[in-house]
Image (cartoon, rainbow, N blue to C red):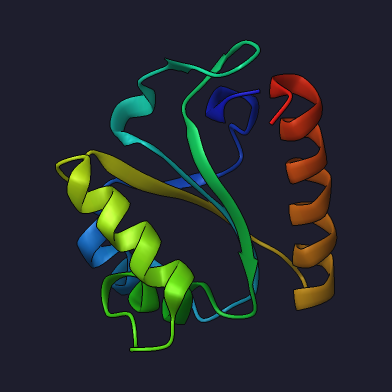
Length: 118
């Protein structure tokens, strides 16, 4: 599984300004290597670094770039992207409602785990 499997997802290539382009709607998103650079996993290869869902894509992307003191995951993702030299980008797709986004996220994570054994 890699991001080429999701041609309907929109790409925001500048991690630090993604929140300016994203809508204020629920959605599913992927964090991938910039340009879709493939890397090895336990099984297979991918360019996907993270799979998530949110009630508001704009706010979610903003929170990754401006994490609060108690937002451990946001800090971790931000540090990871900085460690990569900002060679990461978001892919996203709007959903009709937050519950649909959560269901889609769960399906994608399950597929990722099945395909890559991690």
